[in-house]
Structures are given as C-alpha cells and as structure tokens.
Length: 543
Image 1 (cartoon, rainbow, N blue to C red):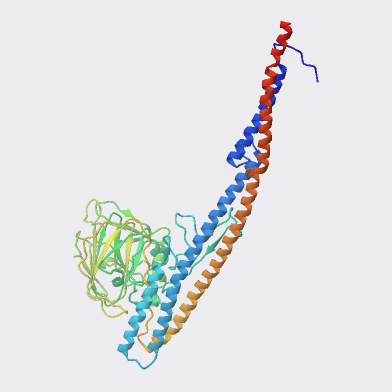
Image 2 (cartoon, one colour):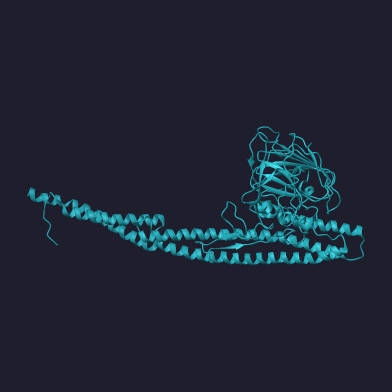
C-alpha cells in the first residue's frame, strides 16, 4: 500500500470511504427490496435466466389451475346428465311395468287404452327430460354431444372436448366426453319416422314437417314411403319455408280432395312444381334440358320480362330417395295439361286456369305473375281429387309462405284430418336460427297384447342403451376426478419449484441485511472521520 500524501487539496481517504459506503448502501437497498417484496427476483437484472424460467413455470401453474376448474366443470356436467338419466331410468321401469300389464289377457281394450295413456305420458316425459336437460346452455341428452367433434365454429358440435393440460397433445392434455341420444327416438321407443326427402335438403332448410309423421303412401316402387304427407307438413295451414337449398318436397297422397296451395313470396324466387313418381312434370315452370345432360334448368318466364335462371335441378331430385321411380326423367310432355308441354296462360292472383290430368282437375296460376315488375307475389294451385300419389316440389332460392287447405287428407295414423282454421296474416319472417327439426315417428304402442309384448323387448333394449350411457358417464367422471388429483399434484410441485427461483429466503436475506446495515453504519462513521483529517494538517500551518 502506497503511503498517502498529506495534502489539504485532495482527501483520498474520504473518497475511498465514500466508495465503500456506496457499495454497502446498494447491497443494503437490495436486501430491503427483497425482504419487503418477498421475492428474490424483482427484475430481470436480479436473475435474467431465472426470471425467464420463472415466468414459464407461472404460466403452467395458472394453466393447471384452470385445467382443474375445467375438469370440475365437466364433472358437474356429467352429474347433471346422470341425474336426468336416473329419472329416465324410473320412467323406463314404469313403462316396462305397464307394458307387462297390457300384455296379459285379463284386461279388455278399454282398460288397455287407459294403461296405454299412462305409458305415453311416461314416454313423453322421457322425451321432455332428454330434450330439456342442459348444462350452461349445452344440451346433454338429445344427441348433441354425439358424433365427431368439430370445434371450428363459434359453437362446437359433436362430442365435448375437455381440455386440462398445458399443451395440445391428445394423450396428455384433453379427451372427449360423448353422450348418446337418450330421447325416445335414440332409445328406440319410436316407430320409424316419416322424414323429409333427405337429411342434406332438410338440414339446409327444407319443409319443416310437424312431429308425428304422415301417411306412408305406397307409390310405384314403394318410393313414397320416405316422404311426408302434405297434411303433416302443415300443422295449421301455414308453413314458413326458408331455404338455402333450392328444392323441398312433400307427398300429396291419393285420395286427398279439394287441395288448395298458395305461395306468398317474401323476396326470393319461388314456385310450385307437381310431378308424378314416374317423373311426369304435370304443372310448374318449363324445364329444359341443358347441354350438360338431363339436369333441368328451371326458368321463370315473365312474358315481357326477362327469364330468371334458378339453380339447376340437381340429379338427385328425380331419384328413388326422393320418391321418384327408378329411371325417371323430367318429362314435360303434359306440362300444365298442354300436349308437348309449355306454360298455360294465366291471370295474376288467381287459380282459374284449369286443365285435366288422369282425372284430376288442376288449377294453376302459371309462373311470373309475382315478379317485382308486374305481379302480386303469389302463386296458386288447386287439385279437386287426387287420383294418384303426387310429389309436390317447392323450388326457389328464398323464403316464402306456403298456405295449404284440404277437405280430406289420408293419414294412416288415424282417419281423415279436418280442415285447418283460416290462416292468419303471415308474420315477419324469423331471423336466422337452428335448422328445422325433422319429423319423428309415433311412440311405440301397448294398445294391443301383441304390441305390448313387442314393447317389452324394445324397452329392454332402451334400458340397455341408457345403462351404457350411464356407465360411460360414470367411468368418465372417475377419470376426471383422477385427472383433477393429478393436475393438483403437478401444480403443487411446479409451484414449489417456481418458489425456489422466485421467493426470497428470509433467514439468509435477513443475515445479509444485518451485515450490510452494520457495514453501512461503519462506513458512514469512517467517512466522518476521514472528512476531519484536513483539519489536522492545519496545526502544522499554525505551528
């Protein structure tokens, strides 16, 4: 160590002591910050690598905790579904008891009908529970949580995805809860439904058929059994049709009388078409073959106005699945009663243009009378007596009101149907909503001994289906509970590791604090002494 120079201009000892004091004071400040915050790492400067690791751990811990909540929500959902299935279980047991009672011969038909009415009430309650049970707005038992999962839309469809991990690996981070259809139809307690033409057209917004199905008219080739009767399409004389698909179909069965059809267009291009199952185009717009093949291109002729092309009639429109005979083609030879085909003259707003086909007097207003530049937005058709099964086709690209009345409409479910009341004025069209529901078959019957005996087997199958659903839900609940336990353990241990990086060791830091405090106090005292040394040199000058 060099010998300091005795000078009054530069106080080297005071400068050295001041630097030491700054070092001790900085360390003291760090200890105070750590002890006051409880954290060892308060900024990236404290531990750059440790800070990055800590933030990743904190994100995973938060995700694990949310995963626990997700799994617990799923458990609550499963418990909701299982509770509803427990009630359905009671109803099924009572239904089997009633079917057993009705299957014996000691009851007459009147008593058996009384038994049947309670049987139906139990069945309807099963359907109500299955369709009403939901969790947070998600239907649980109506089949919504069945099938392939698709989460690409705002509302996921198919089986429910329960996510609980920190990544996105199916083996580690999520699995699915699938709940089968527990409605009467799903449990096999409804007879075969009479549905609209095909699921694709119906889901796209075809005719909305009322529940209960209709007469299974046996047309040529037996193809008409897949179509609803007009009487069951319309429950009160007015049906709102909204389509993104250009075609919707219904059967007008043989024997129907005084059928009156009226379309009120609401902004799209719509019209009525009438076919036989063999493909004979009886009434409607002229169908012309296009160069691509037999696919028909419908054009609405407006007289002086332009021809408006509508979506071409797809190949499937004249297929057996849609009620037409095999090999049917779009035959316009008697279109509108004119040999060789062609539109009839028409008076807008009336159905006064009459022609005859196979004994049927058909009134048809023709096309184009409802166009925006010269019509009343209406299209009419009447049939006095339906002498053979007919296929009604609604064609167009927009919403419309279809009003239909009749005097007699054959129905295999129980006699003729009365005329509906006069329809009210069409309300404003509804906004976007779910696809219209498909019609359902009738609830199985126990009105006779034979049917009651058959019902016993079907109820047994329903109980097995329901038990399979409950067993699956129970297994999933146990799995979710184990998942919650595992996630909690992972979160606990990861949080402990994060704490070792992030949190201050109070005992160690307090030792450092006391040490730095003493050193700081000592440095302050010595700085005072060092500042007094120049005064000592003054004695030499005074001497």
